[in-house]
Image (cartoon, rainbow, N blue to C red):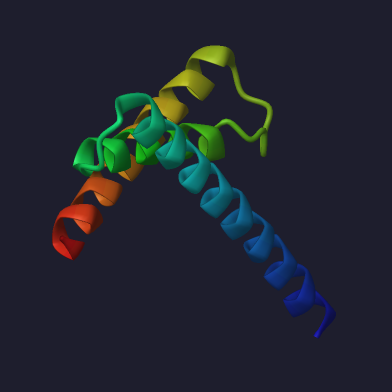
Length: 88
């Protein structure tokens, strides 16, 4: 049970970081652009993906980290945009 508890704590922390980053960045984008549209969700997804990918789990070089952040940015942006379009 202890290992399951540790895993749940780790997942909860990652989800909290994801939710806080996404919500804050989408709010900032809406305030800055003064619009509520899918581009805010795409930008928020990109920022969230890059932030989550930037966490140093393993020591890797700067170029590899930037590449990892770019892929995560693109993936989260696509996911956020698709979900936002589906929900509207």
